Length: 474
Ligand code: SAM
Ligand code: SF4
Image (cartoon, rainbow, N blue to C red; front, side, top):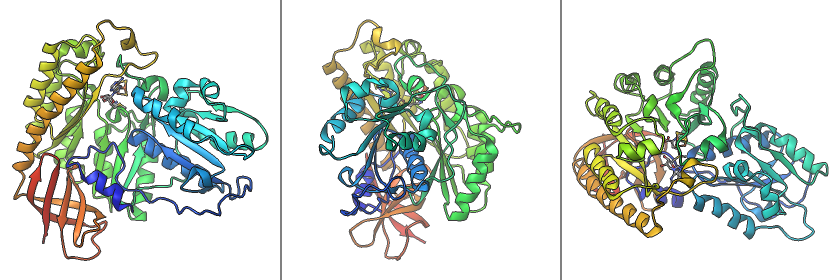
C-alpha cells in the first residue's frame, strides 16, 4: 500500500468516498517491452475523476488480466496505454488532452493508445483528429467489448470505437482487479436519468441501468469469503437503484440484506440523489449497525430559484426535510454535500442562501466547485454567466464558512471514542490511520503491531477543521 497516497488522503478529516484511499500498484519492470500478442502483452492504465471511474478501471484491468495481459506501471513499459477519463468539468477534460500530448510513443514503436470513459464518449471520433496517435476510443457503456476491440487493433485495424450508450446491460465482469485491499467497490447502478442542466453525465454514461440484486449479493458473499469486511455501493444516483429482477428489492432493503452477510461489517453507498432519498434509507442506517452512518447528499445550491434553473427536481425546503429526517434520527449521521458556485444568473442573494443553508445543515464535509460550462448541456446557453474572478471569490467565501463550521463540529468530537477500520500505517512509528463508520479520517497512535485491516476503538485527542487525531483504547 502506498503510504504517500494515504498521507495525501489523511490531510482531510472527512473523506466523502469519491476518491480511492489506497492502491496496490503493479510492479514495474523495465524488461516488460516485448510484444507478444494478448498473451503476456502489457498495459498501462491511468484513471482520472470520480470513484466510479476508479472502479471502472478496476474492472477494465480485471477483464484484460483475465485475457492474459499484464499490467505495468509506466506508459513507457506498456504496449497498450489506456486513459480512463473524466469530463465533469472543463479542467478535468483538458488534463486528458495534455496527458495525450505528453505521451505519443516513440516513432516506429507500435503502441496502442486508447481513451476510455467520459471524454471518449463526449468527444467521440474527434479525438482521432485532435490526437491522431490514438487508435481506440471507448465509452463506459462499451467496456465489455474492449478485448474484442484490442484484438481488432492487433489484427491490423488502425482505429476502433465503442461509443454506444443504448445498451441496457451493466458492466459486470468475471474478474475485477481490486486496488483497495480494505474496501470493495461495487457499482449497483450505472448511468443517470436525471437531467441537471449543467451536467454531462447523462450524455457520457447513458441511461440508468441497475444490476440485479441476487447478482450483487452473490458477489458480496464472494467478497466476504475473500476477507473483505467493508463494501461501498456506487452509482451516480445510487439510491435511484431499481432492481431489474423479479425480486424487486428496494435500495434500503439491499443495504440491510448486504449488512447481514456474515463477515461484512460495513456497507457504504454514494452518491445519493435528494429526490430519491426516502425514509426507509434512514431507517436502514438506524436499525442496522453495519450500514454506515454517512450520507453524501449533494444539494448544489441553497436557492430554490437556482435549483429550479439547475433542474434538480427539489426546492431548498424539500431538501431540508430530508436533512431533518437524518438529524432527528436515533443514530447520529454525518452528512456531506456538493455545491456549485457561480451557476449562470446566480445572484449575490442566491449565494447568500447557499451560505445560510450551510449554517443550517452544518455539513460534516463538502466538495465545492466553480460552475464549468459543459458541451451539449442546457446551462451553457443560459444568460448572465458569472465572471471567473467572482466564481473564485464565492468559492473562497464558501470554503472559509465551511471551515468555521468544521472547526467547531470537529472540536466537539474531542474525547469521544470511534470505531476505526485501520487502513494505513504511517512511516512514523506507532502511527496508524483509518475511517470511522461516518467516514471521518482518523490518525492515531498505537503500539499494537499488525493493526492493518482491523477494527479498533480510538479516542480523539485533538481536532482541526481538516484533521482528527487520537489514541487507540481497548
Ligand atoms: N449524481 C450526483 C448528484 O446528483 O449530485 C453527482 C455526480 S457529479 C459526477 C459530482 C459533482 O460534480 C456534482 O455533484 C456537482 O457538484 C459537480 N458538477 C457536475 N457538473 C458540473 C459542472 N458543469 N460544473 C461544476 N461542477 C459540476
Ligand atoms: Fe449529473 Fe444530475 Fe445525474 Fe448527478 S443527478 S449525475 S448531477 S445529471
